[in-house]
Image (cartoon, rainbow, N blue to C red; front, top):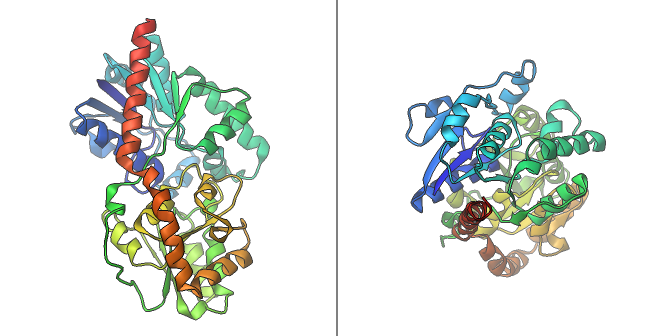
Length: 379
């Protein structure tokens, strides 16, 4: 098939949406499909299989977006029209201008459209300090629906959580499939546990931003009686990095902040003792699933706005959102009981198998093929 994938946000693989996009692109190419990627990454100019549009300026918001390593695409209709011509299906990643324009043009040309749901309302409202406003988030979801999702033939939801949340907001159900973005086989590979540090090491992955709430982990360790025997490795980058470093220093917490390349992560993760996921807003935390695949036991924030809580096998693997005290208690349980870590690792062995990336990408390929075939039948 000729498949066009439209990415308002692509860039470096330092976030879940970008990783999901590259994983799908690479898998479809490996399967022999003719894949064209439309994006605003200027370094992709001249690269086979990529069609590059200009970057859209958003005035004062540009500084905020840049701080989060985000550059949005400008919806150039001429470039998009040429890119989608003759496609069997167009797949849109985000409900932003480039994706919306591609969906409109594709529908006018009779080309079927699928779209993934990778953006929670809070991922947008957090940039304008309205992350906790129910009204602002509801309006954002309604805009997502009106601009993009009402126009598409099939929606891809990474989790049942985001499907139910979106359908509740728009008060209707739409044709969809729930498919995890999946975890690469590199994280499932057996490897020897080589300790990263003499101290008990906790790993935490996530962009350094408001909705990831890493400060809860810093306070939990900083106010615990085992603080001096703990080391935290924060993997990521983002606008809150300096603030988090200052907080760690204030609480005398031994913490490293570093961005790890994808090929580094499996080995580094396998050398840790525990994984803590602090995010309060999340559609599907692939980073948490990667840690589980490696063999780490997770302690996950129970935020009602995060799908990640569903990866907890029981209450020992959950902590109350915003409560450093509860998180400290959960860490203490595993810190003082190495045998419990081993027991939970065994419990997670079967759970993690459902998230193997190849299986998930096969389902994505099937969704695209089914949508294209159905369009041909009804045309």
